[in-house]
Structure formats: structure tokens, C-alpha cells
Image (cartoon, rainbow, N blue to C red; front, top):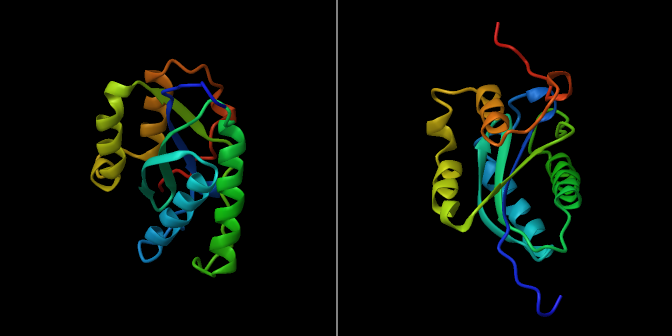
Amino acid sequence: MSNTYSQIYIQIVFAVKNRKALIHSSWEEKLYKYITGIVTQKHQKLIAINGMPDHIHIFIGIKPDCSVSDLVREIKKSSTNYINTEKLSTYKFNWQEGFGAFSYGHSQIDAVYHYILNQKKHHRTKSFKEEYLDFLEKFKVDYKSEYLFDWLEAN
């Protein structure tokens, strides 16, 4: 798209199916590198990627001709196949349906970048459910709780 100039930054958040803690620290870096490759192959700019055993955050600079839904679908499909084919998880791995996508301005890049890189520290005090609901409230996203992720409550 010649003569098209944009500045679009999106944080994408999605969870492991049933919010199971299946992303193991021994292979999470492999997963992040694999996803980085998908984003790069789709000609988008990966700014930060990190997560927890039950969910992932991806912060990208996205071009206007790229559909966020199509990109997330490809990331989920390809990374699921990669994890299962490489037998990284001892259990069958799947991502949960749906995702969150939150937009930011250029002045917020540094804060979002550091937020994502500090996920493990951040989640010492806040659950993924609390974090996700905070995003929905902060961005004033209308939602129906019955359509949110399936939350596994701690016993």
C-alpha cells in the first residue's frame, strides 16, 4: 500500500483453553520466538511478547491492511500445531476461543512494553481474570460475562 502511513499499536491478549497453566517455563521462549516469526512473516512489527502459564500478551505495530482477527487466528492455529507437533506440552494444547485487542498511542509504547515484559512480577498480586476485567473496564469495552473466557476458579 504505497503512500499509506499509519501508526497503529495493538496489545493482544488470549488464554490457554480452560485457562489451564500449560505453558511451561522450559519452553515458553521457544513459543515466543515461534509467534514472533508468525508476526514477522505477516509483515507486522512485534514490539513485546510475554505471558504466564495460562495466557499470553503480544504487543504489535500493525499495518492498516492487516486484520487483527486473521492475525490472531493464524497465531493460535500455527502455535497450537507447533506445541502439539513438537510435544512441548505433556497435555493436548489448545488456545481458548476469543481474544482481547486493545489500542494504544505512540506515547504509550514504552509503558505497554514494560508492562508486558513484567508479567510475572505483575501477576504476583493480580490474577489474569482481574487483569483482563481491568482491561475491559479501562478501555470501556461492553461485554457480557457469559461470553468471557471460561475461568477456572481456585479452590
